[in-house]
Figure 1: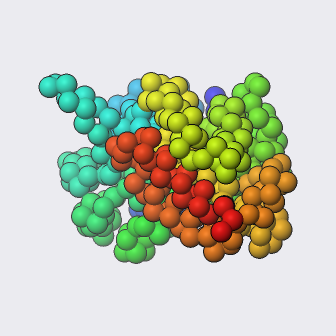
Figure 2: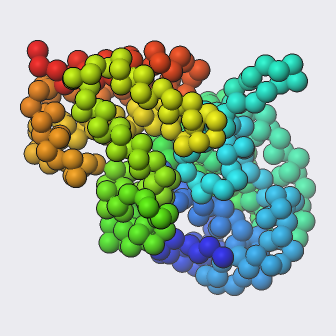
Figure 3: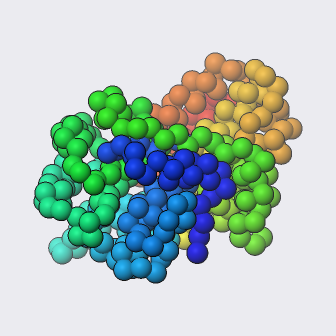
Length: 362
């Protein structure tokens, strides 16, 4: 049976130490890849379990635990975007899934993109659930993930519910970007902060949980900004990541069009159920590389790619800080639309052309 992650033990103990004083809504916030979504599910399971006591986790054996495992507990509701529904099995709160899990086929054979937002009717549908008493005279849980996927209309609908708390009901909101939530939503929740784990705690756990033949734990952890679950998710992409570094370094010689042609098949592999590499992930990797090139120019050190220090220095020597920063900001805008059904080749060519201009001597 899985256990609470080592860097979450204190939070677990604190919350279970105040079971009789829990507010009606908790906002679990922190950067992605730290396991807060899995924590929320395990906390919900603990509250619904009839046998666990104190700081114990859910027993997994009682009737309510069986209902929850089967996905039909009458006192639990999971509210999340439609696009996340098909990616839930086997996930631990990560951001994987990409384009492969965000589409569905209608009866007429037309491919329809699944919604990546939490819709207002999903919140309105909670009315009947909240109107009746609990089935086992215990807790009732509504888990909303990620909370920032609510648009303003949906958030306002939830706000009305939070303003009139229902007895024996706990709302668990999980957010990797809580600043996108309405201030009024945040003010009606007790915030539970999940900071980046200490390296001394995260690294031993990561070494013990990496799949065989994966990249070095230290390199992976640095590349994902110190978030252990994100490192596990990217461990299977180690070969692609190494090729990515080689290709980025080759852009000044081979040109962005040639590299885009090499990367396009990666996106197709992801659609066919292979490695979960999509346009957003590639944009994110390139952003981290640019960040480190800027960091080398400004501070003489790298954050994400210490192992590639000499390559970063060589790249920094041919680029201006202003050009790199402009490119980084452009990539922020590009990443926001990366999951749209854009032509993959044209997207990659545009992405890499922007980078090429930023690192080429004027």
